[in-house]
Length: 133
Length: 59
Image 1 (cartoon, rainbow over the protein chains, first blue to last red):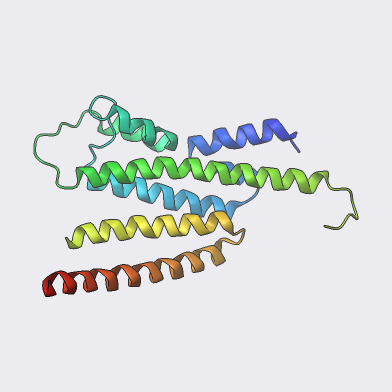
Image 2: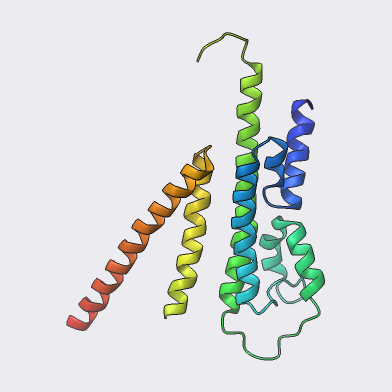
């Protein structure tokens, strides 16, 4: 078993790479899948609403500050869609931006949940054997 | 109008599901409560919307 601080740090880094991946480190696979699917679904729906053009460091640098907390999906979207140009009016561009930003910020909330799991696990491990609450 | 409502509802659904998963350890239970809470919100929003529309027409 890893010691406390490296474990939570690696969990947070994993959670930043892919939503929910940090929870796998704490053996909460069901929660990892649940959060991963929800956050990535919000992000993909946002990309779709914005006609795949809402993640861009040139067009929307401020929005990228909120989106970047999603990690790998944002990097993939940047690589895959940054060359696309906006030639016509995109009807739901604002909604797409909102969804992708909410997805990024939700991943921060998921990381806070991971930290809470870490604190509970550490407290349970520190409790002497046979002690009751 | 309808598409905006659907967009808002989807965002609300995801928020409800994530919020309850933060409070519960059991994911299945969290999903059930989240869906139920989303349903209550949706009913309130729809009823309030219809009432508001009726009221503005009446004015």
